[in-house]
Length: 266
Image (cartoon, rainbow, N blue to C red; front, side, top):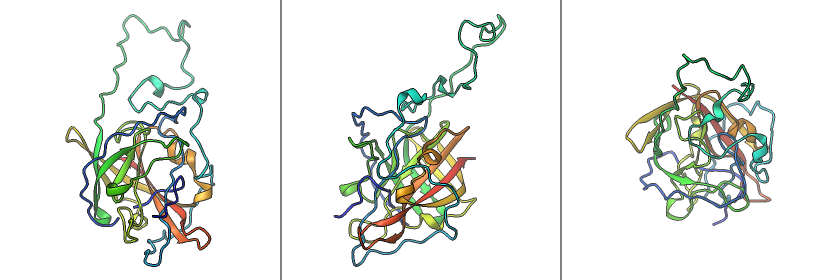
């Protein structure tokens, strides 16, 4: 198998029945943004029978912000955290410091309640392109790149466990291959066919389902992966779906681009 490891993610248009993989916790001395960290990376090489995935109708309109193959997670001193659990990090940055008169609550003030915990995601469904897949839970490789589905789970989608759980504030990140290990379509093969207004449903371990609505689709060259746009903080719960796209470069045998779907909770 010839994979573009450390470069992009890929995906399938049909249902995939896989059991969720174990949570992978890579011991890496890296931290991530509120909702993520490194650029996604993985594309299957172009062999003779590799199908060409659908392309977006319009080119990417956003300015590139990072390199998909080499970008690493922001350092902790950037004020970010890898912890996906709800916490006080969502407080506004201009809040008064403890001990100041502005920070002291009145005697009548009610204590702030922490958000209810959000259960882990177990499956994803995208009705518009007939996709259903159990979700693996993957982390980071030792070099700081995103782990991708491998082996018998190659055609399953995966949630990046350094991003928020779907339904938490920030962008939850789900990746999937575009072509399979035998060069046929994989889980996110038709991702580029999605349109603004289409929905994505994520089921969680407690049986709840959170629904996201697509508001943008972008296509970026792999060497111009928009790390901040994908993994940066958002005011509410959002979702990112990532796979490979574009054409297959003769020089490398890999897809040239990433397809990225942006969605928010409805």
